[in-house]
Image (tube, rainbow, N blue to C red):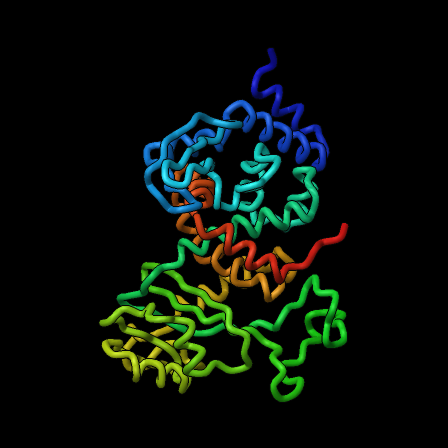
Length: 340
């Protein structure tokens, strides 16, 4: 039997493509021997999953099918599994999910993952957005303490669209912000960052933020007693005035730090915007209609990465997300079909 060092020497002699294929095969074999789904199922089996059809908690277990726990509802008599109503429902090739999640952790684009795992680009696309739809459950219900807020402007991206209402741009530098009254050409990423806490990002398609836009973004998400720090944009001022219990402090947009009080600054939110640009860069442009999914991924990836068993935690998040399957299909109605 060859030693680990011998295997490393043989591995180093392979081409990059051969290494990628071998690692993919080894990961799949590992999953088949020690199914991640079975691990997740056993971890979740302590609590019986309520019926996704009638929401009754009067259910009992009825064995396993392909490693997935099955249930029967006493009230409506229907059968369902641990994955019914979640993004995993109806998914084939479940043995490749661990490899897929690993690729996503590395920030790999959809086409590269499809090639590495030998799945179609459409499957890779659907899996990504089923996973990202589950991230909606991690959105914080409220922000508190000291919260910095600012917006990042991105040009509208219609990547994948086959019915453009404008001439196609040869390169991103061809973008023009003002193309006529009433024509939206940009997306504002409203970003709120708790100091030492949560991030909340929301995409708004508008040239300039209004008070109504900001109200819709936050929807009672700013807790009473919160210190809200923004630039001197009039919309933030108008929003803060009508929100009882919020202490609003401002700083000049071109200064970033108040000259009289160093604690009043937007450094955290500015750093978040830089991190967001770096995060989006490997994807070579994200279509604006899918942008919110990527914003959720960016905002909450740290929560998942801080866990010891990262892949396990991702899958638990997906399986526990009863709303993600519906969210995915709402998203899918506006999605493009990828032709390969």
